[in-house]
Image (tube, rainbow, N blue to C red):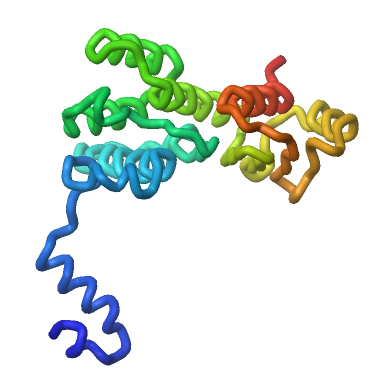
Length: 221
């Protein structure tokens, strides 16, 4: 009935508004949206979660009369290695606990905090399954990548790409030498991006590549 009555410009927005009134908006930070992790993947879910956390933090700062701080760089880094990176349901059966852990990982400000959280998880739930190990490893890589002006990394079985922030503070000379020496593996695809052409069937190979790229571009050696 609602669809039949909406046949004018802006009908889609009106229908969405009606649906929102009927079913509610859900809550990204609560239990009701937890199933979305399986559908969209942890990487994208983590990005949404980080943005929501940052938005809440800014709102609280405004209410307290403080000047909102900018979102920290690591919250904007996207890393997709096309591997399982999550807490399996059987490892942490309680959905609320799983979401709590995801929030804490997403808001970790440094590698030491991540490692303390990892120790806590092992102490509470047992040895980490492979997917959970990947989860912590990717979170740590995001922190490291942000320090070197990397915006996005995507790596799959046949290669991947790395996108830097505009005017990145990286060791461009070392990167260009690597590209010149290995043109079949690395090449520029834009002012702030490189393509990687290498077979990487295993997760270990993909993690190794990301670490290799970070070592190539880091400007603090």
